[in-house]
Amino acid sequence: MTERMTRRDALGATLLALAAGPVRVEVARDGTVTAYTAKVELGQGAMTELTMAVAEELRVPVSRVKLVMGDTARCPDDGGTWASLTTPEAVPLLRQAAAEKRGGAVTPAAEWKVMGTPVRDLRGLAIVTGRQQYPSDLRMEGMLYARAARPPHYRAKLSKAGEARGVRILKDADLCAAVSADPVEAKRAAAALQCEWEPIPFPVPPSDRAALMRSFKENSTPPVENMKTRYPPLLRRGDAHAAWGAARAEDRHSSRYFLPFITHVPMEPRAALAVWRDGALEVRSGTQAPYAVRAELSRALGVAEEKIRVMALGPGGGFGGKQRAEVEIEAARLARLAGAPVLLQWSREEEFTCAYHRPAALVEIDSSAAGGRLETWIHRNYNAGAPGLMTPYDTAHISCEFHRAPSPVRQGSYRSLAAVSNTFARESHVDEWAARLKQDPLEFRLRNVADERLRAVLERLRKVPGGLACTIEKQARIALRAQVEVQGRLIRVKRLVYAGDYGAIVNPLNLRKQIEGALVQGLGGALFEEVLFEGTEQKTRLLSSYRVPRLSDTPPVDVELIDRRDIASAGAGEAAITLVAPAIANAVFAATGRRLRELPLRL
Image 1 (cartoon, helix red, strand yellow):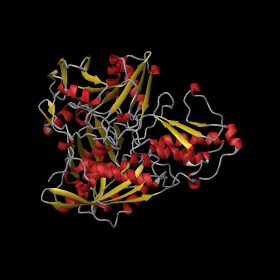
Image 2 (cartoon, rainbow, N blue to C red):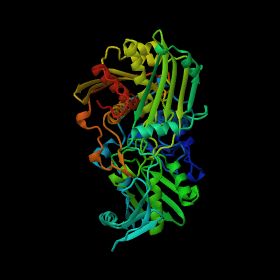
Image 3 (cartoon, rainbow, N blue to C red):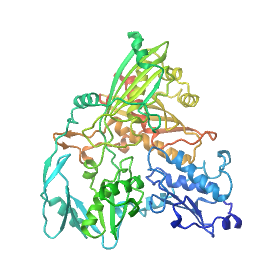
Image 4 (cartoon, rainbow, N blue to C red):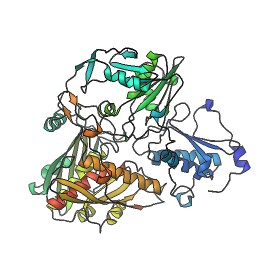
């Protein structure tokens, strides 16, 4: 963009004082543009995309816009950085605010000059040169480094705190940590602490899949219809249970699927710097949700939210794992005891054992079909959640249900939430119907899909061989073909071919990066990843015992996108990961005749 703001534009947009309250876009008298959002750059390209949105509407170059992100003292509460909501929600908010500053309407997609073009990550040079600062790089005058002592058990109560000479030890309930001006000294002292812990047994052994699945079913709570939530736990059409009961036995099909607990494995374990000043708290960390973390800090510490400032720095990875205030609360507790700023850094082992995991899932599906068309669909997800619950297939009788169940393990958000478990089960089950009816998997899906955009995406993969999966996720229409090679018990993915319709594409370069990254991450959950437990312990504690995708596992990836400028932009960060496991499982069936219904996929 080379168009400059006019003098009238600049003079008409006066700089608003921050004391007047959070604003979204400011234009200074010299034409400098500053925009504000509570969204956080997690590597998903939010900084670049939101900067593009402001530049588009103010008719200025991207380089003219400064974006302030994730600061509760300066930014409006746009919600956490989750659920792929930055594109469909935060982009329109900033575009509208910028357009109002210009004194005009939001620019139609057909007239975009900045949005819709491939813009490189604005942090790219800093990242590759090592200048990019992450939470673990934080420093402050007078700061102490802290390392906490942790139990060998998954859950335990501190019965006796350890002691150490020459290093200050801080104790607060079950939190015991060494603090020092020397990070190496703090780490060594924490490792040497001889704390005594009283283990708390698991209510159900998470290592026993059969017991876990039984517990999920027996202790679950049936869903109640609530259409006012983002992810309704019960979605119905027709009378699925009556239709299922009336269907002929030969027209019915039932199957069960299981996904284990897996963990996020961000490149950077979490870290937080906390400092108290006159009863007020300031915390800097790599959180994905600064306002939610501020609320958690308030409850945990008994301090009013107005006296807490959370500043989110772009972390070295999150994937849904950095939404809660675990490390922030611990750092704040230690800083209050120490009377000094404290930087608490988790080790890789703490990242594995102290953070929450992706929920395990039991999914059961009962369906019926006649004349090559699905007629009844009953989908029950136990424990994992409601995201991705609704079927994209045009079926007369539907009951899609999320049954909440108690979990023996701490669990929480993971990229795409429960859409991975629900899509794995649904797309595997649909593929089973195609095989049972001796129909081509793509043709069977087309026969049962009414949505024209999803049909168009499927048609893009008509001439591509391989296992197939498709879905509507975050309003995106997506499909994936996976080609595999099976050697004995080894499954190798040889190629992935992806097609997607995300409405109007804001940044095609970043969208492709997000799709490719999600597909590679999905290989881990499909083929390797599982958190293991034994007795009262979590056995998975280090990367040496937890297999994530390697460069040698990564196949060629082809991505084809449909850019629809007449349709609102859909969320993209989470969608693609949902298709990986079912596409691979369906490819394995095509190659071997074996149907795999549990993850990770094993022959």
